[in-house]
Image (cartoon, rainbow, N blue to C red; front, side):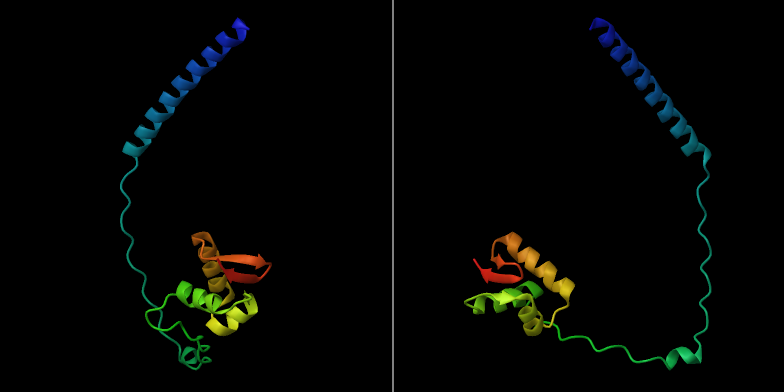
Length: 125
């Protein structure tokens, strides 16, 4: 047992000296490396005429009313229902993307304002 302890002490000492050596080498490398020079900015490419004739951007879905956050709008819909609201109903009523809705439900559940009654069905606590 004592043999193991002495071996462990030796290994520990060796590791400490190696660590010091690595630190000194690292410092030497930092001193030896010259400071990087800023690269000149690249010239912008001219815009082609064909790029202007692209399809118009897709219409964005309506955002929540002014002064209301995404969490407020989702909680409002859940609060108004007695039996709970499914994810499909929430998508229709809030006009949010799936990712936004998922994040809002997670945050509301974490705050303790809502709970999942069953899979995909949310109710106010």
